[in-house]
Length: 142
Image: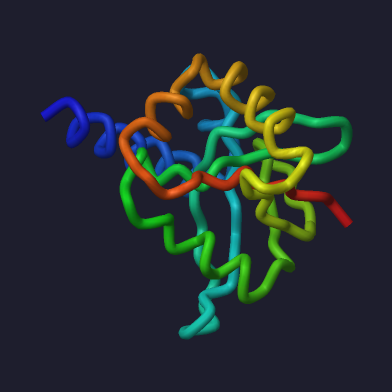
């Protein structure tokens, strides 16, 4: 039941963020959130997802956790097919390039610590729910 309520709250948050074009939603759930726009790998349509983010210098970091589900989020497949994305932080939109960083990468542990610390250890809990390695996505504005 708690997971269902959490997912409903997150969907509502994302809807408010999108409908207000960023006037409301950047910090609505206690951590900074961005809107990630990807291109659907099959449909070619723009897909928008609200995601908690952290910073690593000029880069933005998000996590393809899908709440600890065994399946990765659809947006991860989209950005792997086309890494050219758009991010929106509050009202500011920026073009960017995204890349997935997985556990074999030498920088993974450092990036994972940044995002997990920033999101109050939630990602460790998500990783414990699945055997799938959860990638960290580095988004570099262009």
